[in-house]
Length: 255
Image (tube, one colour):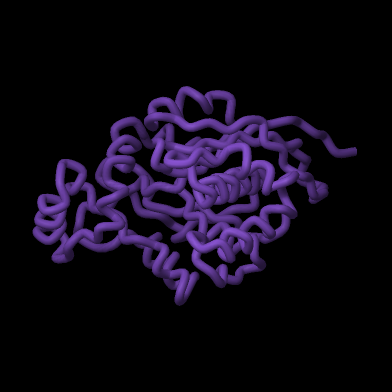
């Protein structure tokens, strides 16, 4: 006889309004069963900053966040980013932005960030990576090695790759066809994905692709609780703050 226990996880994605958070409930099965279970959204919300993300997810067993956590000091690129690009290939590999190096966290403008990045790594910072800097700084200010056991870095395109039977998504998530492609996959996991998107969408604050990314992050957290995830790379390095430089990803596409 299997034992069942309700647990909560969360998926988090940065959005224009701050951070979009979706909290999901699921029944935990014992190791002798692999019975599929439709995930249910308990609630969703927009947090102003990462401190609010922490305060709103205290009852969650695991929180998966689409943001770089462990950072390179500039001596070489993050191994998890390199591995993720190799896994996705073209054209989705371009969705893996090189994470800013730790010294860039002190920069207040793009020109300063580029200068610091060039001095430490020999490469300028991309504008896409600079756009993440404020949120990376919020996470870095609060995260600790101990807290990282509950707040794990993921990348949505790697999770969708796993959900799609280890095949990259064909279309960009910013396009309508790309959003439909991802929503179709998530419909096998969540009840009424289109309704979830319609109710959570907030023009100017939360876009449909933010919701899709948070949902697949929550699914990844469920997979992790069930012991169905690994990391890129398999043996992560520690950064100068003692944080693991890794991306958590599902190892199977089923539930």
